[in-house]
Picture (tube, rainbow, N blue to C red):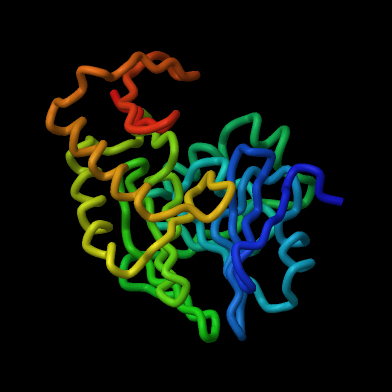
Length: 247
């Protein structure tokens, strides 16, 4: 039934949904509700998929407004997104390829509800706290699952974190956001990113922050040219195939 999205279990109440290696979403369940973190590309019905895993009512939250995290919102009535990323999401919803290839007959994107730091999603026994993490996009967020000691980071902490996009903030502003994450470091041992294939050790987060610091401090002698669909920029490697991409 689902050809693109492959599901694997992180633990007894968290599922990882890998959408054709192009984006990753998650289902987290408590005793009362399920929370879908990012709905991926929209080619397959993530709501129907989640309903094969749980019969709990579902809430949706998007870590940021990029297409590979929000296009699956077409299968839901409401989704939480930080208001600073509304222009980002609305831009992609206006793209012709979205209307032609993703938007199904009779469906429309979910109504956005505001999410902000200080909010929590109480699923019944499992609580996820929201922390703002602007940088990759202005309204990026992370979600901290204190019980499982997991931080869901979206694309702000990722194998290839893109900071060269028009909507990306300056690197020094991004570093300020990451310093806040560093302040939470005693509360999580693992991370799950917007493109994870499995549970990842939080030491990746530490290396990520050091790499952004190096870029900000001009320690970029080993940086390399990086070509992407928008042109050419720079990439700061800090591990095996791991990079911070920046203007």
